[in-house]
Image 1 (cartoon, chains in turn blue, cyan):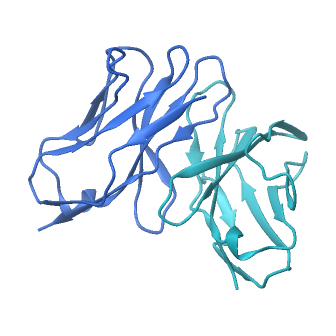
Image 2 (image 1 turned 90 degrees about the vertical axis):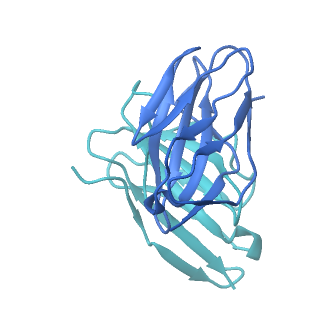
Length: 113
Length: 113
């Protein structure tokens, strides 16, 4: 079955530091990959996505590249801000399936000024 | 265009009572998904519904849990005879058919005393 493995948190960084949150997946075929962000007390919001190998998703300074050879979709940002503090979820959707997503366990990120 | 609306935002029940959680999808969205988030865990898929149809309920516990999405009105997730282990955040998401993107509500947080 499908599964997503995320870097365990919590992660604490100083403002303007470089961020990497690792995500690897197991799935049949070529799934679509997503990063969702959950701010305190809110629901999940789509941050970025990639639908095929070597695609790069990007939004708000965050990037992730779909790496088929390593089955990974690591999230990166060059310079984080306090406002990036949130929980980040990696997710996949199997090709040909419904829009059901399989989520990782989430990584809590705290940015200190 | 209002987002996905969930209510109540917070619900407290005693063991053995019933919990009803409601979800109104975004306008024009005909697909609804329910997810459960246990403390410090990721989101687990429960059920996928279209109007008057359950499409995939592979994540629903076999007993006490049911879901519906009637022709008129919101989708309802019903938990009968709640137990402490049902305490969690329940998120609803909706999507237009074929879009590949889920839009999440802010969640309903159930506490069972």
